[in-house]
Length: 202
Ligand SMILES: Cc1cc2nc3c(=O)[nH]c(=O)nc-3n(C[C@H](O)[C@H](O)[C@H](O)COP(=O)(O)O)c2cc1C
Image (cartoon, rainbow, N blue to C red; front, side, top):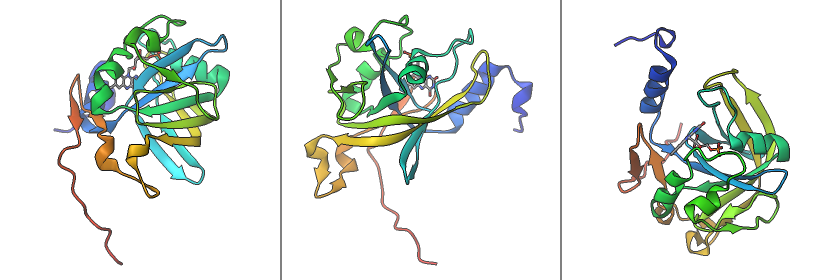
């Protein structure tokens, strides 16, 4: 099979993309509006960038009408966000927060989640998530406009928070984090078969 993505309708391109890059970790992003209304939504086009500065990025695409998502509107206005980790224990509630509630409706309330004040930024973190990264906006890269237009949000991590049970003498125990990964469609994956592969010497 050999496909020129430009020959496909955009929806099929999207389906190919999300079926090709997987499993994807899920940034469960909390933000706040200038009026103080909290917002929460999952984003699996997400990764870390570097430790200098400690930084992450995720991509809230425009909706089918070309409208920017509430998360992006809040970050443009307040320039801060929190990435909370989606785990097996909170996956159902994470999914519930992806519903297209109108701007000004808080997904914390809709999904029965608990906002906890952050240490260094205005948006709260999610109590039900064992790991949260408080971020200051560094840059928004606007890749394209209109329907499904791409926006890459890059943030500097200014506070790292994790549950004490995950912290083992300065080391984060990934085995206890139990993250879930997004596959394609409505499929997810658990980390239940990880293995170690030490880096080779040159
Ligand atoms: C697991 C999961 C991953 C998602 N990843 C993305 C993503 O990477 N980019 C995106 O624009 N939307 C993504 N979505 C859809 C958004 O969560 C959804 O559009 C949400 O309503 C946006 O909320 P907001 O308007 O409050 O920001 C994802 C949904 C789910 C369930």
